[in-house]
Length: 412
Image 1: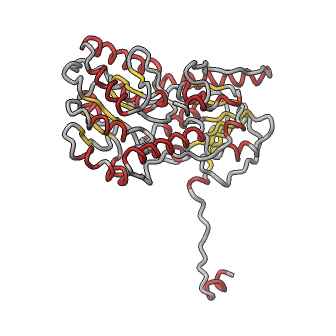
Image 2: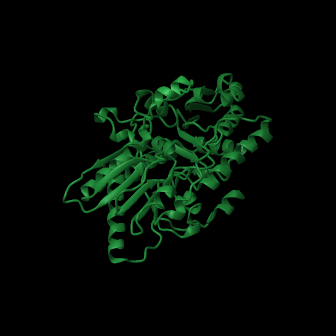
Image 3: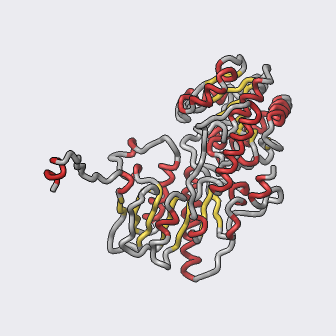
């Protein structure tokens, strides 16, 4: 048949499954307590050595750790990628733990008694997508610029609707966008790759006018435009920009003046958090400025806190600042300027104390060891509740009097 088709000029290609259609089974054996389906990332399970595990994002480590915990608890784990559009279950599963992508499709195929746990690493997609387009509209109206890129649009999903339990790495901001179904929600620590020592020699008085913007793609979503405009109006204050500038040419073109022709703004570019350059840059700065419009735990801010930086953040960054940082009352340019100047002019003893408290909080609450302990507790707790068929209430998501639903957030 192939030869006949080729005679008519029809090219015949052999179907080759993509990496996203792979499945890896871990810990199979007669002593297994049951099977768990983990839909997250497949790449970390296909490498030949630990050194080949991708370090581009901490979720690779997180996925491996979840699998390890399940194995230690005595379960056989089937791992697939969340982008696997062809997977269909051929067995009964005790649990299904899945990333938001593709969660609903898989959940509908599973046995009725399977416990379904959704890992939601953004605010609800409706709020997240609304917020990023609102920021782009505000930029258009403010500067007369339409930027095609710089999106952080997330996939539409009914993961929340199909889950029995939800896990997040943020705080009440992103929880409030998800609580409309009254599902049990568990909060988890962030998992930064590096723990930096306390910078003993840092002079917080000498660096009081230096600040860092640190983030990945989606510059408008993450408020880099607002930070650049704010610092362009404050020539005595310096902003160091650490992000993948080469990946958003439309944004860089629109902000070429601020990035490359403004003496107090320094376009550092992408910096590996495991490199000495990141530590050197962080030690030059007093704080991290992050006026994002929607996050789920502010992982980039947590990394900076581990380096001893004082967080100056929007509420939507989803990072609690307590007594060691400042939350913008809104993300207006004048508000960012006022906050930067307020913090910069605090007594040096207070700045040192805030920096130390930020570092201590990150060390105490956001580490890989902390995640491993908390995630195992979570799974054991859920299994225990399922065993006694107890009704589960909300976990780890106390009410926030400032914003209890997405409509309140949208009106800010």
